[in-house]
Length: 233
Image (cartoon, rainbow, N blue to C red):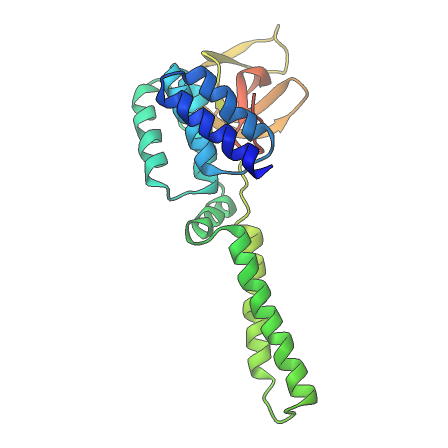
């Protein structure tokens, strides 16, 4: 399995270097479809879409890459460059507080590493309690209490640092907003490719989206994609 993944990734990178961006995108996205949560993979897909001139899709994948690796300077630079091309695109509202806190934690350590640290502190606390009970009863209970408290805080940190996002991106050339989830309803606004918003609720074919300027509207879900969870095309 690992060899197959590496082979596909190498083949896609070769195609990209040869200027075959559509073929490279197809291979990279086939890896994403297999559930690989790899910010470098998402970054490569974003680069493919940038080369293909599909800036809405490019922004989507760069946002996905930053979700898992918030401090990556190359991805930040590419997204900033892309935003200079998406001059009519509406920026996303600010992240909810918990999402922002989680991204700050992920800049320090990946969620699994926070979880590993939590496990080590809790195991150490348990070992001290066992030693205190059977070997050295005179030991203070304060050390295991402190270790277990730190471990529980780290468990909470690991949970908070798990990637989560309600951000959605326009991946079509434009998207009309409606007053109701009905294509025959009243059109109340028009957003261009690469515009972003927050998903408030969803039906089978419609997204109700909040925008950074305070407006809300219904949009066809075919014209948008969620940053997370990740669905490759």
